[in-house]
Length: 344
Image 1 (cartoon, rainbow, N blue to C red):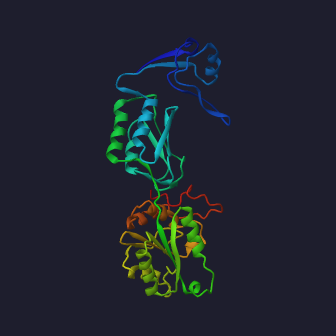
Image 2: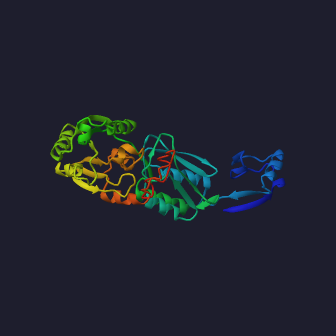
Image 3: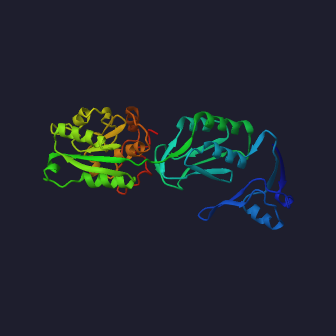
């Protein structure tokens, strides 16, 4: 790159080679003069007020890439399925969700990109639900001009690692719900689990196969789980009876159904007594009592991942420990908070 420096007063009729931003606190931040603008006599006072006493004229070498072209290549390389990019603006390209779904970030590849000289790529956390049009990431190069090999290195990482940033759509399941507890089954108390389960599943656009009730009877709960799966349930939620009390037999019933337990007990609060098991490929979720008392629990972290068809593992649940503490804010802002994010 060859650069020529001209005084603003001597730059009339010269072409600006990069965006020049004007920043006034509380008023504006953005390009006042766009790349390609031909400087006029009347522009000089404005440029001086922006602190631009010199204008830089660049000649880019064959092995160099301008920030705008670099930004486009970075965005193109990083955007996977369900992602679109816009820009560049001031050299930055932004990436947005093309559809609703779960944001998946290839974190090791993202770190490798940011370890390169003169490149930044910042994203939302991995495994968060996103809506159509939501901004997911921004990327740019630091200098006005970078070496071709730097941009090529980013493209190589993206090609070898697979999608760096993608939005995986949610699938639609027939979900069976089994509400356990003799106190509910015998109508001694009103069911509180059913409305919560229905609300969460409806919000995720899932279909409820049916809601059934069972007393604290291990064999009966076990049979209901197997029957739900036989009737086409792609997922089964079993609520209540998850503690260590003698009458709480739900964990044993899930095991008796033949389901392979991935993890019983999760390092997440609320949600410590959660169980995840699989009957074949069908996830069976044992949901503790916190599921009806708290607005957001471990279910809200695990359920979106399962709804993409991902097989959540014991290792995934263990990793939730970092960031697994809900702060129980008076006004809940989930998923725009730390809950469930540290493991990502």
